[in-house]
Structure formats: structure tokens, C-alpha cells
Length: 188
Image 1 (cartoon, rainbow, N blue to C red):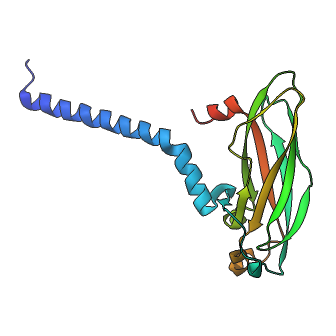
Image 2 (cartoon, rainbow, N blue to C red; image 1 turned 180 degrees about the vertical axis):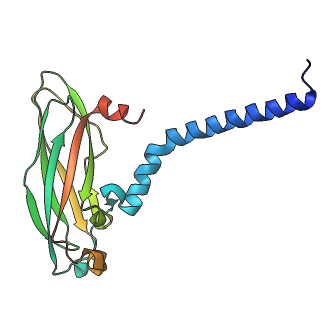
Image 3 (cartoon, rainbow, N blue to C red; image 1 turned 90 degrees about the horizontal axis):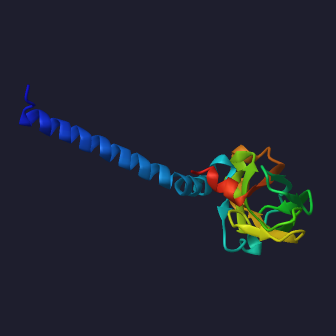
């Protein structure tokens, strides 16, 4: 039985639509990581913070203080020692703070790592602004090499206007270092 031209056209349209959908889905998957990172930074969702070029003017600094705790983890096969130089710091809302994390390559070969971060409670992340940070930047350490990595930040003065944050007395900035190729595999 011969297939009519009308049926062939319908089949061709269906095939083209299916291929178009597959192509669009592939493009969305490829763009999902950078789009998700931009979304998280804009909204504070998932504990992502904002990026700032400088701290607010000194006149914006509040008398309200908050304690910022620091956490460090190493994931997978990364043979590094990684810890904050200080466990916590008390800062005034709007005041710039500078802290350091120490990383040491404990292996006998060069190793490249990359760090991710979050802030908890998640609802505070929107107000946490990083001026300088080592996150999402590959760091290569030689065998036995030790480095101090700076984080400069402030809590946005608008924090005190958010009534949902009145009970917040402390928040935690957490970093996790991954072996660079392990980090990239997460997004494949």
C-alpha cells in the first residue's frame, strides 16, 4: 500500500518537530549551569551570594552585629588540607570584613581544585555580598604548596529592613573544594 503525499508531509512535520524539541532541550541542558548560577546569585536561592565591587559607604554601617561562621570541606579525591584561618568573625551590618582560608596540597604532584560555596540560612544569602573570593576559579597547587585565599565581604545594609531576618544572629559561609575534573563532571 502506497503512502500518500499528505501522510509523508505529516510524518516529515512530526520528525522535524521532534528533532527541534530535542535540539532545544539539548541547548537548555548546555545553558542550565550558567543560567542557574546567575539565577542563584540574583535571588540568593540555594545559598548563593551577590558579588560587589566595593563595600557601602561608612555612613551605611549599622550598629547591629551578626556573627559569620566559616566552614570548609574537601570533596572526593582532592588531596588537600583546606580550613578557614578563623572559625568566626563578628561584623556590623554594612561593614567590610576580610578573612582567609588556608589550602595545602598534601600530594606529591600538582593538583588543580575549584571551590563552590553557599550561605546558610539560605534566606540570608541574598544580603551576603562578596567583594573578593576564590570560588569558581581553578587553583593549582604544587606538591606541598600552601596558600592563603582571601574572602572580602559585607552584609547588605538592607538586611536590617527585612523583618524575616530579625531573629538571625549568625550565618555560615561554607566552601567545598573539588578536584577540578570532578567538579566539571558534575555538569556533564
